[in-house]
Image 1 (tube, helix red, strand yellow):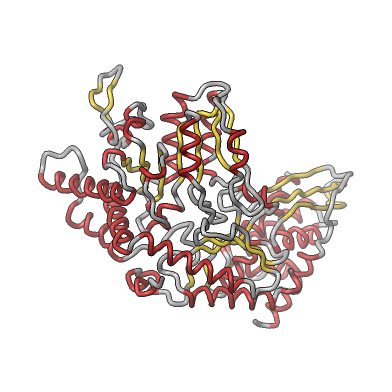
Image 2 (tube, one colour):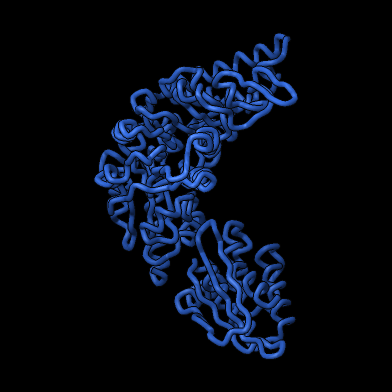
Length: 138
Length: 404
């Protein structure tokens, strides 16, 4: 295993064991849920919009390492961003894990999930929270 | 019981020595004989059945009907009681709609179990919902067996159907179907058996089971996808209206009404999966030649060996009953690791297991688990493969201990 793989494993492990922005956001103005019926994973994404800025975001639910880490990394990546910026990030993230697009530096820590593109059975785990975010922002 | 010499009969197994295939409960690999049977049909026999006046069609029909006889022999049934369907799911829907829709009334009950595959639940939900009938379940014990002490309470004059799985696709539990069927018949209920896991792995004698219906999927018993069997007691089939209507299943058709062929044709509307049914017949012959007692003994030996060796893996939990009433299926979890992550790690080691709820959500809810990983064995698996499986788990446990 390369040093890079190790680093990614550390990031995923960290976010899986200590998910950021986990819990309820009582003052949420938008929210949406997602479920993967094949494994039972579920996620609820709650967003506080101030104007068109994501002032706060939290998620809750239960899932595998990939879906949990992806949701956690997502909340960190989009907090404080404009809605349009968050949707653009979502597009780039999905291009990477769904279509296997080359690493995009704009994705930052989200690059830790790059390997998912090589695991077709797990792509849905990585995109679960992002689909919920898109629905909440729509 | 060592059947490992049979491995050469399976081109996929022989051709992928790095793969340890432990997902036969989902679908089995196919022996060369079955694959060649499909090819031979299309190259030498292809014609529609039961209609052509020419010799080729008669030959195709003869091969198709010969397959019916082979499946009858496999189940100790009469050929007139063998209905070719796509799979167990279609067979269960056939019974629910063709029998249930016409016989269930408001207040009636369908008794299922907590270990059913969704194919044994959802068709009854659909039909019971239309008729105002209720679906109730025999609960599970902590060991993963049916709690038969609840049977007398649950089986009442309202119970019109008892529909249960012969062998659990998650826990491997083999249910005492004959005993339950006897009680169900005394209560006047129809007995439907989901044999998707039992038919491939243990000797099945439908006469001895005492049920009214028995459903199986060909692809889980060395056959191709697309062909399965519904066995039905002839008197019951004879009293039933068709499930699907169309060609091949009729006696006489007018623009405003029709009458129907006798069973089994009454339940085989449209062109059937001819090549697949013939290849399934070949698969049944292969299994009969090996001997189903030997297949079961082989699965059992691998199960016992695996359960013993898996004790070496720290943080591993296996589910399902310990005893003779258990087939070669092992559901397991490793610490707090999610079953999908575990299956991905095993896949990186060349081990193919399934992860998820295995189409048995009520069972997983009962176990308090979102998902499990599942290893399942068949006649081509070996002790060496069990060793590779256990050693991979040991490596994963060591590497991801921080995740557990």
